[in-house]
Length: 299
Image (cartoon, rainbow, N blue to C red; front, side, top):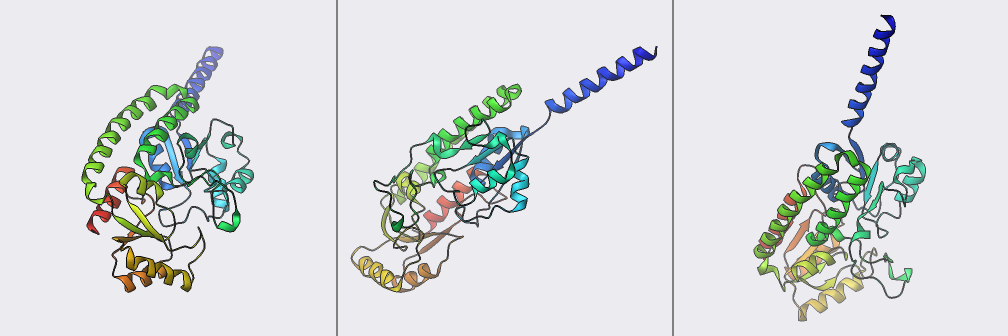
């Protein structure tokens, strides 16, 4: 009798452990909010997502804080932009975390830029030209068509990491693809009046948005990427705009707006401050809606 009870308890323990593991969530470490939102769409109840940055932070310049290292140490999947966007902090974070599952070359290491074609790849690498990215401009999340390609690759990655729930992830991907495709069609129809609009940008962050909406960049306030504009450079931009008037000045809310406000005061060109990523209380869909509406309202 004692052996039977012992055997029964052992079976219950094994079943309990199996049930617990079968319902465990994948811990996801996202470098930026846009990828946190995307993986939440695809992973649903099967993922536990943490974003290392917010929409009000510059993802180039983040510290590998102990709290981030602790989160990375527990991650099953790392999803970042790549293309050197996080080069100032991600390598140190990975090294300090000691988590082999999310190292380059492992299934849990996902760089979004690896799955799309990048724009503005420099023909000649010269660091004297400022914050130049060797693989091209990394701000790919500003093009919804590239988001679609990344989402497909991410769904496959989730399936490889968690094969028991492959059908769940594929179902979510199919649903996302359908909804996102319809959203793109709606956004493109709604934003027709933006095509051909001339913009001034503070930093060259918006190339994918420009390409998607057919916006024309006529000036950049930074003389070189990541280099603050001098008075002489701003005076040059002001002179150029007299002959080629812009429709709006565009900058990210995390950026210093001193030069933007100076130029707006001199030219009376409308200023549009956009959150560069998804806020904590909205989805990727809602963020796209919001930035498009802000651009349309500035006309």
